[in-house]
Image (tube, rainbow, N blue to C red; front, top):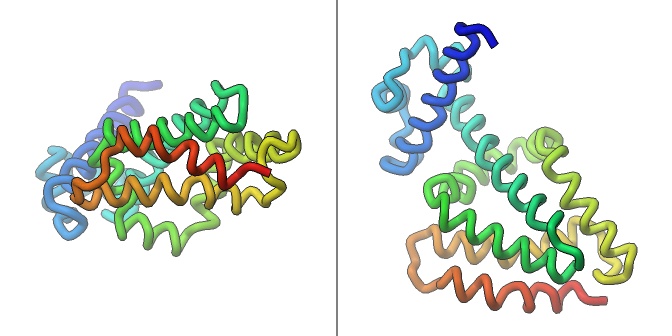
Amino acid sequence: MSPKQRRGVETAERLLDAALQVYADAGEQGVTVSALTRASGVSLGSLYHHFGSVDGLMNALLLRWLERLLGELAAGVARSRTARGGVRALVQTYLTFVQEHPDASRLLHSSYADRVGMAHAKQLRDAQEARLSPLTEWVRRHVESGEIAPLDVPMVEALVMGPIVATARRRLSGLDDVDLGQAARVLPERIWRSLTP
């Protein structure tokens, strides 16, 4: 990589890091061009050169953290020998991610992310195919082996991820009535019961 390319990557990274910090500090309404350039120390021209717009930057930030989350989930199920162990790994990995990355998790579970997801669901899914494939394959393999009830992959995804995402959203919304440690102990068995043949 040439020095110019390296500087470009560093600039993009600074903008992405600043965008997450601005979002964490000021919410969606606070993510403005002036706030981003001030927080990153990067010029307006560089922001537009690398991302095209504030929306382009925020979409790249969403993808960055979605890729990381999906990568961690895929690694978690890959280490599991059984379907039941995979469910446990998904719950624990997801909730650990939420605890370790609260600002990124708030963004991933935000109304902004929901709007982007609804408007661009197919493109997002296609862009994440490499990250989703191991999870989809894990479901198919365990359905075929009879460990998981003969359900379509989207239904298994809803049964597994629905309770996890709902728990994470509740915690991230500022309600302190959800203990993620307790959820990590309780949810795997409850979810597993919904998947058994």
